[in-house]
Image 1 (spheres, rainbow, N blue to C red):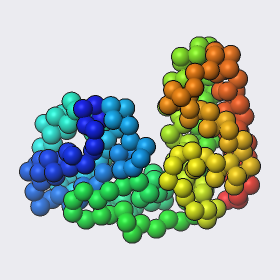
Image 2 (cartoon, helix red, strand yellow):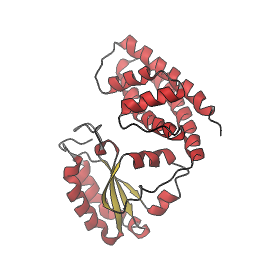
Image 3 (cartoon, rainbow, N blue to C red):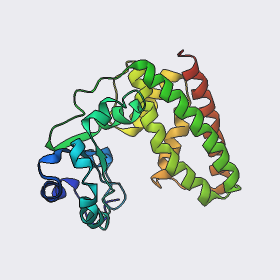
Length: 243
């Protein structure tokens, strides 16, 4: 989260200076990614996330970043992802959704932008979408049973899972060659249209997470059950894409 940081851009000069001090010439680039790069950022609530790109030699000096990481975590800046160019190039087949999401929501802070020219194999994206959706469905069922119908616990499950589905939705729209909207609500609507889903379910979940609506315990239970139903339907739609 970003408590005390109203605008992530205000900390960028200090971030650059400190990581240059730690890694010197082994620092290839720094990238800000996620909600902190756009209109979805909420001060004191949203995460501030960085990718620190290093050379292979730089990876051998990670222990030099202990103090810097600890300092910024006190200001609620998440521990960065430390990557090399080779790692990224050789993992596009494994994590295409994550890298597609990085590419969509990032800001080059310093040095080389390793995300701008990435290209993606649609087969790898479809396979990961199928795997992620089916995995999330199992986890949602398990979480539902563990909550024992307690509204607070259901709300926590919704908050934890919804962001992952928005990232999956972006990847699915990419597969369908649909122009990707910037706002989460528009992404949900576009995905619902492309895959014949009840988008109102996901929009209500978005409102619950943002505390724009406060459904009763029974309403929340029914909403969660329809959430499961729509995820099952989406799983079948992705299966139909082939692979």
